[in-house]
Length: 209
Image (cartoon, rainbow, N blue to C red):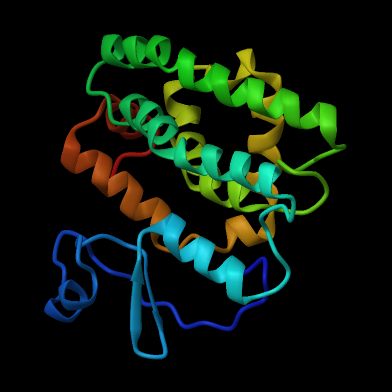
């Protein structure tokens, strides 16, 4: 919505204490939910696809084959996100190391996809000079990795230069930065505390809660 300059109101939800009104409009009890003219739309990809169909400019390619490829990479986000989460929420140093090793496959697949994209466009985004739905889909998980990396120091992205450059680009993009609620970093740390992650142990050493 920020990339398309759509006017919207946002209400943040405490997912540990979901209000009844939210559960009535979110069949899966998850965020985000988009309410448009009394209609409730849910699931990130579905919302993004809807917005791309009704609000210019298109963030998916116009070419049907390229658009299908983009959709395939947004469909890969859950696998990529799971790899990130297994690292960020690991409970021991060994578990972090194991998760980093396991993440090599999804990281390499995205790295290769970015390499192919660079052969067909000049970047810096996935499809070229304009941000796309693929960029928007991966950015939140790269943000979460960036929040714990100063503590975990995995060096995960250093082996994947295209992915590292993409992450740096997205995390500096105002549309990505402004998508985070002001309270998010503190809530993120609090979530790690509740889950007793290894990252939280390291956060405690540098800045106790």
